Length: 119
Figure (tube, rainbow, N blue to C red):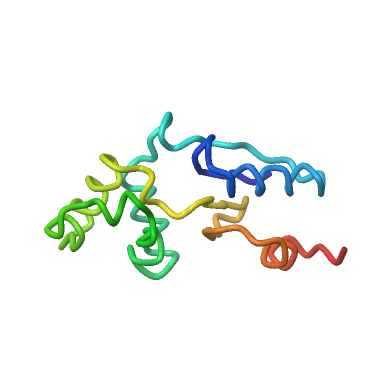
């Protein structure tokens, strides 16, 4: 069982969910705009990924529209507050496997490697 976090209206999240169905991999989907991810979980994700920059989608419209002063949070609480206010800033989708391993984004080849699928 895996959990996919993302936004219900996101095309990439839809592709990822369809991919999981195609390969018959049981999963749960959490729309993190409707069901906010706790601050501690966001911090865990950022730590495991190698920092907040790896979790934040800086190519997004949401990021580009932020005032310059909001684009350089100086602490974990400032980052988590930013993501609470703007959940669309999290790269999508976030994939969490049973062993607690986290990854962001979706490509067919990367997920085949992640799940050991040879097809």
